Amino acid sequence: MSKRRLGRTAAAAVAVVAAVTAPTIAHAAPTAAATTAKLHDDLNGDGYSDLVVAAPSATVDGKKGAGYVAVVYGSANGLNVTTRQVVSQSTAGVPGSPETGDAFGSALTTADLDRDGYADLVVGVGGEDTADGGAESGLVEVVWGGPKGLTGSAVLATG
Image (cartoon, rainbow, N blue to C red; front, side, top):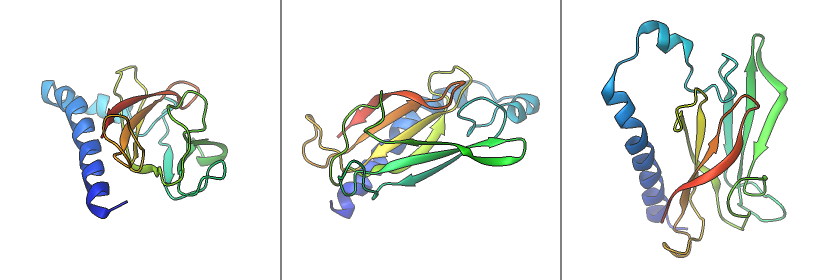
C-alpha cells in the first residue's frame, strides 16, 4: 500500500471521529468533577485507564499483516495483564475477516460514540479492500466498550 493511500485513510479516520465527537464537545464544557470522573480510555467503565496497543503488521490466522489490537485493562494496582483482550477481524462480532495486508489497528482512538458511559475503540483498517472504495481503500470500525470490555463492532466509514 502506498504511503499516500495510507495517509488518506488515516485522514479519513480522523475526520470521522472528529465529526462524531465534535458536536458533543461544542455543546457543553464538562465540569471539573465530570472530567475527572470519566476517563476517555476506560473501555470497561471500572474507573481505571486501559491501555490499547496496535499491531497492524501482525499475522492473524496465517495472514501476514492482517493486524490486531491488544487491550490491557487497568486496575487499582495498575495495568492487569491477566485481563488482556486481543481484537482482530477474526474476533466474533467484528466485521470482516483477516486478510493479508489489512493492517487492522493502523490507526486508533477512543471516544464514547454511543454515549453509554463507556469509551469505545475506533480502529483504522488501512489496507482493507471495500466494495465502494476498491483494493486497499481502507475502513474505520468501532469496537464498543462496555462493562465486560470490548464487544461487538460496526463499520463507521469505508474508502
